[in-house]
Image (cartoon, rainbow over all chains, first blue to last red; front, side, top):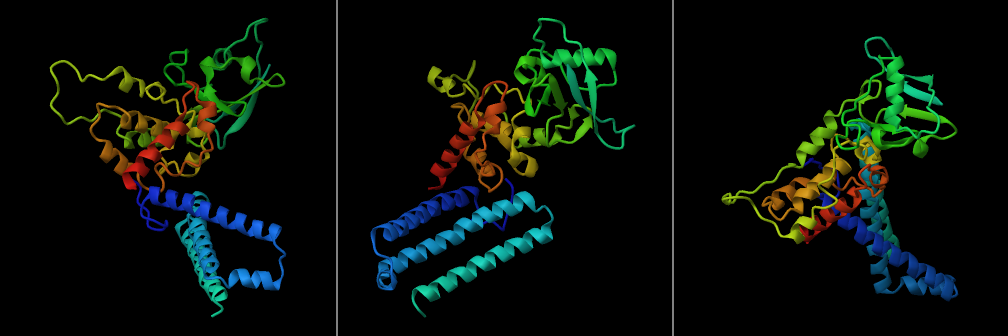
Length: 114
Length: 234
């Protein structure tokens, strides 16, 4: 058992499952948006109408949280593979975490027009 | 034929270097790479490499031949030699002791971690612990591993984290005991593997499958371990 405290969950199987589940959410969201762009006339009115519906705001928030979790698992893996010294590795991980946190909060602000 | 050899003697060399040697191959023969090495050693006895059974059973002569890991004793020249040139290097990712001889300590340490022995705390029967033919069949494709380290040293995940990621060879053995109907320590074995490194550092690159000289499939075994962990945790 290798101990680790900087990964998303406390277990390997949790990280693995989260990455798979969030991948499905992101794929679904991307396909939906692509479908929307192909099958409807994209202009300010339709775009605004889409994002003013609560279900789509929730779906978008889910996609945002999924991106945060998915990217955290992925970038954490990349940093532990390639950055061997503890200080720069922790710094990069902290920067990634901060960036994702800002994006999620900013996303909420944009979605609900706060 | 031109053979380019990785040479390094820590007692006399400051750094490793490649040595080109011209070898006369007997006409009409498809020698094994180990035979070529033996021909070289006849002329230059300072050349160091491991070998023992010379028939792909002991797993001593794993090395990198023209960029691909394999056992020198069962790899014919016709399979690896390109443009009449053969480049021989030690297994990648492990510290070199001398020439083609590597230090396998980390590899064995990872192997040791998976408890590669049967654990059964029930009273021993009079003769032996029996297994149905179906249960025995589950071990096929797992028990044949000879620990040559060709797979683990071909795995980028093992190159980056050889101290934390168990590697394809160790994980194949981990599943060999997880799948054994006579073993009673499945829960303990799985608990030892459920961290982000031991199993989950496998990214499904499958170099292990393409280089295994015994034709085994560590990636598939790792998938089975992952499923067992998932079943236990959900």
